[in-house]
Length: 111
Image (cartoon, rainbow, N blue to C red; front, top):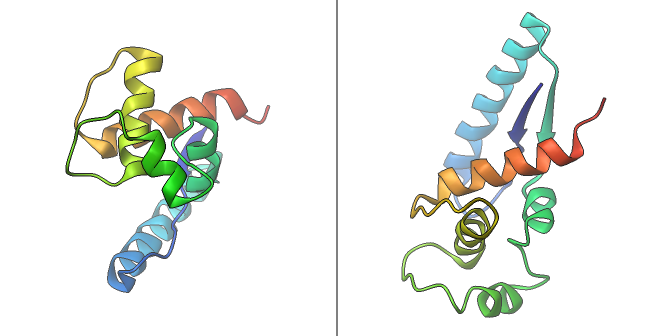
């Protein structure tokens, strides 16, 4: 089974459009191959992994211990989660997010 992060409209409409097209192409491929898949909304895995506060202020407070000027609070929290949970130290927020989606999926797979 394949789990993919669902698209979410942010500030950049062009990025959203490209991601939605990619998601559609992947879904077409999965269905054509008979591969089961599930879209995982970002809020689901972020909440499960503690990478999401109820507000931006709460996210910022949760991420206060993490020294990094780069990624936003939710990204820092996903990197902190993979370090705490698995001992994986990375500054690549995309890798951390993918690990979090995988962890969410393993613990919420439909049978």
